[in-house]
Length: 298
Image (cartoon, rainbow, N blue to C red; front, side):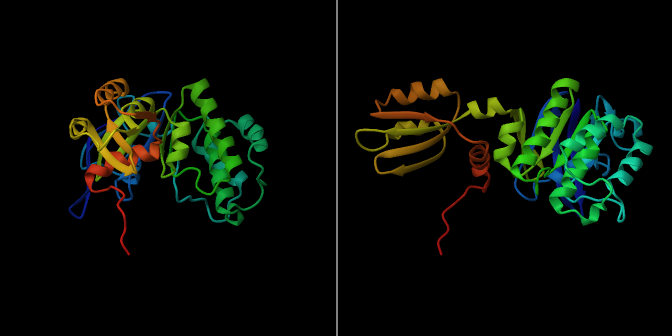
């Protein structure tokens, strides 16, 4: 559904995007992660048709997004920095949305008031940041979009409201095949809600896979041997190794069973495979790109 091919965008000679390629299928929840300055927000502004690419293409269902009202009418976008009309209430914004989105669902708006306990007649600028985020989700979900694009979407929401918001969106994913494209630094939350992940670094997507495939391709091992760590174990694709006494923690890229079979050849007295979180995967994948977490000497 969403396809980005060799997308480039520069500002004053600096390439914020330098050959980005992305594929997000209909009905998936795609999580985009990366360090600050990786180009995530710039990419999102291309997906929403705000920026013009220097080169490359951004298409939805094969159609370009920029200056395409038909495609844009199928997209709901919630940025990190929200904007509402200065004196507007939720009811004012609802009427505005209805005037430009014919598919706005009035019945759904009324039902969702049970999920979002906000006063629709109160000026939005008087709400807290978290309450403004709730208002944005309330209005956007009523558009019944084919694509929901989110930039740091649940920042400011309490844990209960986060769960409610994701529950409503997952319902739309399951029932209507809505596609959710979400950029966030909250990797723990993305791990719970995403089925596909793209990792950005310096204007490129360096990894794009299903979350289950990414998690199965990197293994954390606790191993111990009679003596030192065997030299030949370095034949494995080891991303990181640390020792605590005789116990070694190895982060190894590769297929789980092949790694375990190779380690067993060195006759370990202890071997235990542990799951990695998305946050750990993110750190270790970027570790070879001068982004590793290193000890700081003060």
